[in-house]
Image 1 (cartoon, one colour):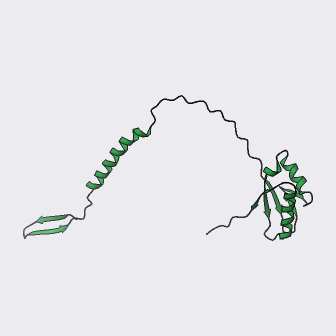
Image 2: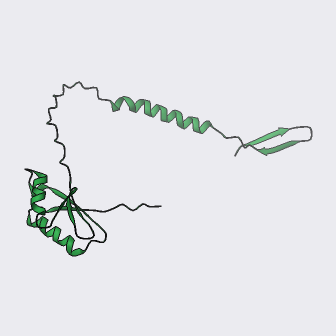
Image 3: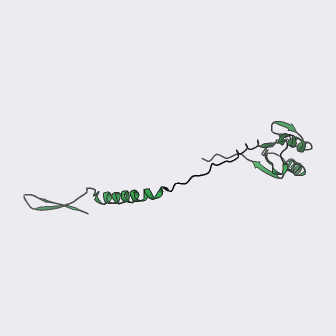
Length: 144
């Protein structure tokens, strides 16, 4: 800590200096500025290279996801259209068209009061028709 010395009529008084000493801060900033000025040219590439033209096929749009909804009374829907467990495979094959069922991901939305037996009937119908990739959809809980 620095000190101030005042000389006055009666004698010397020593007081604490409460001003901020910015000299070390300025020194550090100047050193950092020099380091960045020296390092910046090293970060750029100065070797000339003729790059080839990138020819990439455009990625196809991902297919529209297929949702199966199960209501609490056991009613099953493919998208917005009602179906039954017996005709679920046929309706899904119509919806996905010529795509491979084994590669297709099916999203299942089930009411929280759906019976487990109704859910398992839908899962069994999916497996019987070659749909093995299944995702369960839930609602996010708001955190507060």
